[in-house]
Length: 386
Image (spheres, one colour):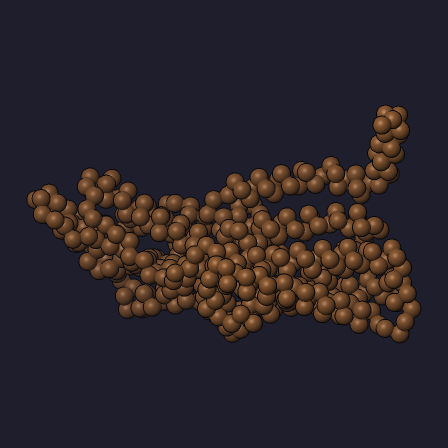
């Protein structure tokens, strides 16, 4: 091997990068972008889990034990008590209100103290002092366990507060249990939570990558220019590609879904077809986004530079691998501008909660608007080219 010729080729490659300012900026800024988003995301803990607390405890001569536990619970960052009902609110059926909120997925859990909670704690303490076996005191927690990470976080916090208060204030630990009632996600495993996210992520990645690279390739080979000389309209071109790539996303998600059922026995409480329809909308929108961004790339190499800018935030901030409550507060607003967030949430609601279109239409509407805007902008971009 001739060292001089090798160095000449190396110099030529570096000179090409020097004249391509976009690529040079990509090489410098992308590592900074990646370490920032990875660092903030992986550094986050679950915070702000929305719950209702229903305190029906009538207290005891020594005070309300439940109130001390509630004070400890609300002092933590993990739980965000959206409402706290006291004994004076019995007339408004606070338990019914709280459970309805869980069923509508407005909150993640309803934490309920019964009317005799303080009395039962005092009785258990007295029995333990006398050496008599004590009946366990309990707190009922009604959960939306469609996300196992959040469900476990809620149960852990309740258990921590229960033990902390009883040891700190009463210097004894009577038997105490957290009664778990799952409204959604009964028997759900992590793979059941994971599969809908993988479906959405795979559909978005494939349609976006194929569309952006294929459009740049068609421009570089002048196939697109020849197509524009025919009577076909810009809308027909964009619509045709959107239908094709949307079907690709649909078929790919079908393969993932069937494979997950056969290999891992994932549960599907709702309509599989509805979940796949959500993925189809995401695929159409992702294709439109790829088409739109491809107009700003002259070569396939420049087109590839758009991939991490779209894919990394989607992978890390859309709730695919961990809940949005684990995304740092600084980045969490970004999650709601990522279409994959709504696709993953919609698919999980269908597959784990068993919801129908009457419940997931907001997510589908967001994806439909996203797809419509991307297709319109793509057609406009193509019209300018013509």
